[in-house]
Length: 434
Image 1 (cartoon, rainbow, N blue to C red):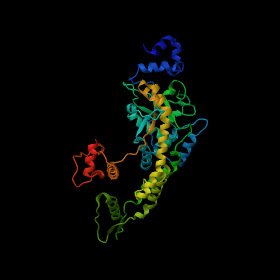
Image 2 (image 1 turned 45 degrees about the vertical axis):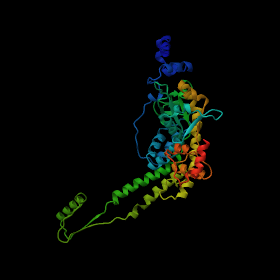
Image 3 (image 1 turned 90 degrees about the vertical axis):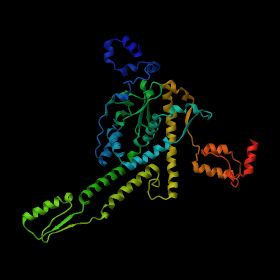
Image 4 (image 1 turned 30 degrees about the vertical axis):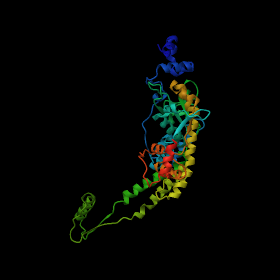
């Protein structure tokens, strides 16, 4: 018999009917809750708060500056902050491909950067690194770093599989939690819900960012909306002026012929030919591309401003950038990459790791270790060969080691060759020393 079943037998039914599961949990010691959770490991439970939320269908609608102002005002309301409008605004902004690409550049750099687990004496433990080599870990990196752009973010770490490992993580929609009150609401705008900052549920939820942190998208929103306006205006321009006009000249003045020419002109696009009489002429006008220049220039300017805000410049995204300017831009952007790495390192070591240790005994080995980024420089094959050539001109290098790191089988040396900077005699002496 489970722990909750025993509690239900010990409480009068009339009291139990008035109390919800959340009310009962407030009076149960945390340790006992964990014991019951251990006995249910591997079973998908509906007690996760994310499974109880009422998520409305995503309604994408055009956004403008007035909606932007209203969304910011509602989200920063001191008495009752409401993030529903700004949540819709951010979903709309992230439809922009250039903006999404810039954000993915920041996130992908951290996701692909190697890490290690070290103790307080900087000793690395490679035997437990596999605990974090899971899909949920990359999702965690993405969610944490997206908080820089979307503002305060709430992450749920709850579901574990039959092996005792964390199976998946869930991001609570921003419109479904009130950071000021510290509650997760069943529907957006509710003033009551589950307390995720205190009590039994606090060990399953991590809030990233301050309560009123709106993220970088709040500052970029006017630029993205201006770009969307330019694209929409460009489409209107194409609809009106994108198709060359057709000019018909006739010496007929009778209404019946004019009606025939009108119907023929209407069908001209689908038929692609006209038949005239007498002195009638048909001419297709020309269109200048200069009319679209203002739209294109505004879109390019908006993309450039977004690149500067997110990466520190447009050198990495400009198609006409020179090698020198791109390298300088990368150095500027790297400061932002390093800042992202520092943020995730802090969040994981001080907030995620303690919850993992409490969630399952599988993560107990992580308790005495911390995540650290591995900043060891690695060389590609070309760099390895160039390094071997430079070092080989001064020192004798073990051919077996070269074969190991390059993967190139070395069968021997030619008589006139000087492999790795060594002559045949030097190579023979090196083998004698072995």
